[in-house]
Length: 228
Image (cartoon, rainbow, N blue to C red; front, side, top):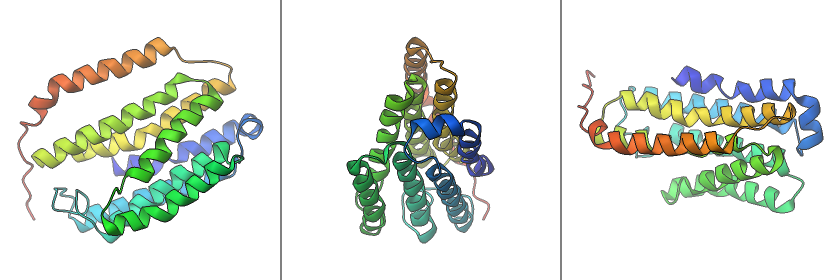
């Protein structure tokens, strides 16, 4: 799953190359998408370093879980920076977007060191990326990015509750998959197509009901044995 997380940001590069003319006419800075992809890949690398340091056994007592560590902090910083660069690439012609993105990049390490509201900047920037992405590309499929965020939190909490390490892979998969919906929204918009609101809303409601129904059962899965 971590190899998947490393490779997924390259979809942004492929998207930028495939639709360079369309994006050049539609967004603020096409070139920043390449830097954003690089930052997201770096973030994934630092997550791998942290997981390796924690012997690939994630619990609430590890930095890969709810505790803090150097590589985990760098992972958080570069993921946020990648998201901020996407936001600036989309709508950096507005001063408030620039200032908000720069502020998020500056405060993220401070919040991490202080162990205070660590994920707030990433949440704000990620939500703005989804809203602005819809404003620009007019395809509701981009809102499925929010579903992947919810799934990430869902599987991570089960991982922390059970120490069943299979949920580590599901958390990583969910966290990395949101990019695909940005790519799909750009692809559809470039071809003058649009996803169905009914389909998007139906998927979100369906997933919510399924995950609500299986929550208790998943939390009863036994802990994965740690042989180290």
